[in-house]
Image: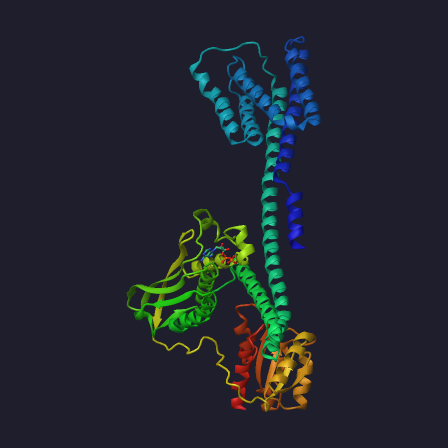
Length: 576
Ligand code: ADP
């Protein structure tokens, strides 16, 4: 809606159209003034000089009227008309300046001013400068050249005054026109930039909402595929379910990538700053990727400088991990045989600041020099056949590049076709004394504890997700009650005791946040303090803060891995 109205506005509004109108108006005004001025001369010639000089006056009037008529018919020749009028006015300036009976009087100076106005406003900077210099030169040249004309009758005082007033009026109106155009255009461009900013915001919001809406159904697709795979499916069904789960997870990665690039473009992505263990991060990546590399028959090597081990650094492990996952993922994807290496070397250590180089090398297909310039642009892939053969969207490296820039670094690339590729970037990380969390996520590895005693209240309005969660709870031997909105949560909580609420955030009637605030105000302290885990498809970086601020205890992103939820439930089962 906003985008359409901005485009329409762009089409309607055209600064050059308004400028052309003002030029036409100005020029017509000047010509009309010439008719009046010719009339004054004609009157003077007839009344005082028996018609002597009337020919020149009539020529001025007729030619000005003719040009007005021609211009109305063919406005395109305006530029030529202005050139002609400016040259004629300059000739007039010289004629008066070198005339014995007039010279450099007020009218001559007014003519010079009119040359400047028409040349600059009508013809632009270059012609404006040229014509101004020529017209102004008359006022200097007259002191050096003694030659003078005769034959121009000076007007009597009263007619001369009228002539001067007409000229001042032309000068005044030309400024009024162009001032209007200038400020009108400034106002219009301000409105336009506001509308464009709104359009960009609308695009960001649309993408965020759309991605959010897509994540919700994906939760049940990925979840149920996961459930079916671990059911007693036969080999063929398992294979098909693997494809289903793989595709759904690919779709999720794509949605997350679109969200990330959208946030990066809108300048809304912020890096976190928390203590983290580099070892743990690199091990996690190595473990995940080693498996993928081995599946393809590739060797995977992780080579981390010994002096970086067992240290805690301050930074954003999730985003650093995202960069490395992308680079290693690509290396595995574009390599058919040989090996993929993830190397971290220490370049310099000064006190607590450690400068290190992360390098991902493969022995894959390589990237040609021309393609190297393109691949960091969003939606760009090396060749069209890349998409056919390897899939992908071309968003990964665009995100990697911008994320690296947020870390204050630059992604570098060395590659040779058919030999392999090496991506690297340097980072400066501060070592901190504080102990980093021993796991990357709060979820611990599930241990198949018995969860049957856990009394869960699930708040969820999406039927597919309810179905999926019911299947999951059945498998885990949990009996759960379902509330389809916040108001039902309060009702059920009032009637029965629970150990835990799994709370969807977006629900009709009363959303998860409102419901939580109301729960926290309940009179019975056991109910008011019930443990609440938010289930959210929200993609905001602030979600953790918002969830905690409104009184919830923990959260899970939809779509979540079954193990993640299981781990959180086991933790609660231990405590209840
Ligand atoms: P995607 O992998 O989704 O296509 P990327 O932005 O991650 O998008 O990569 C863009 C393109 O860069 C890829 O399509 C591929 O052509 C090329 N590319 C990236 N990494 C490598 C690599 N390690 N070896 C060869 N080509 C690569």
